[in-house]
Image (cartoon, rainbow, N blue to C red):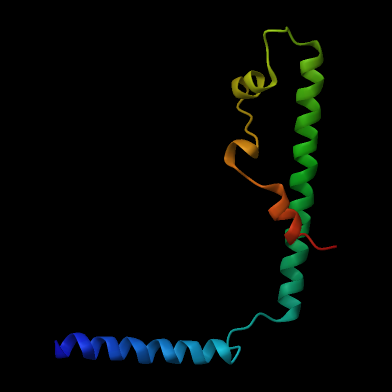
Length: 100
């Protein structure tokens, strides 16, 4: 029993020290670093949207002349194309992170 209590007391003290360091802003990200990361995210996010749009346009163009038995979903599946929706990616969540 004593070892268990001692172990818990040690854990409490460690967590108090960790909390104090977090409250003191230890290891905070500088505004320059944050800006750099935001610009990188914006770059990749815009590229993702551009590629998504291009693929959608290509599939739509193909589907205009495709046989009626071919669906867009079937075409994409046969050609190894995956959609964000298949992987439950919510574009609205990512849009909120994008800052101009």
